[in-house]
Length: 333
Image 1 (cartoon, rainbow, N blue to C red):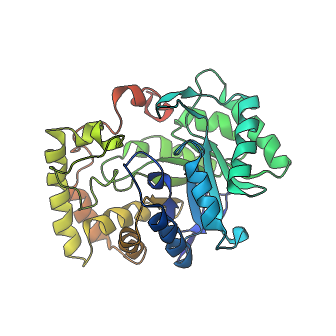
Image 2 (tube, helix red, strand yellow):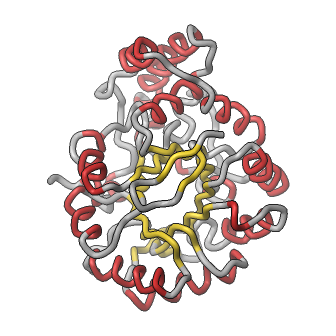
């Protein structure tokens, strides 16, 4: 497994990371034994970056990761944790809290659930409209000084927020959605991150499975599955988007690759400062994703992929209107 550094001050990690969210939440039931086996297989294959959030399954995901860590050397892994999203007993989202006192409380519980004495990257999941980003980053910086956090990350922040945050403390990386059909960061956020020496960990590289080549328009979704209310999976939109996947699959096959592998490799090709997170929940899907790390696409291959999936051709926003309004990264400059 090749490695990449997250920005100029962040850690060196595997060229692909593993996102654990779907093992606990948002995509319907997951098999816990298979989830643990998938994490084991990922680490054995050289993946060192493991991404979780304290609100994924309201703590379940961190406890799952703790069990997985028992089989591996903690010091060889980079654990990234998002915090700040508030949940109710029904699983609904009820706000963002990144007050200094809330950050310290959240980290204390994360460390206990993970069974570790530090988090490698700690990041607010969203910008709290009631707390200046300077206060959020400043609080995490004190936790860095105390040894509980190694690096500060951000998630779904706009260019202005990146500048304000970086003025307080070096930022290792920005976690943000980036894929063939989610390219909004290219106009301003990505150039700003590069100017500031901030790496990118790209989630949603397969757009929740939509461009994986495995999604069918008649597929049923389980209760609680994010895709049941995602605009890109809505009737009408999904058919238009799957037509793009058919075009991507045809191009990928010419490189002896699957649609998923081509989509992941395209994101990885956008720069050595970008690390795609794959959200595989099974060893089978992980194996397919891992082969993307070995796929060397030529300039002609990349051009053909972009021609097959034009950046403006996607139908539907990446979140519903309420969640889009929470994204600092989507606010006009």
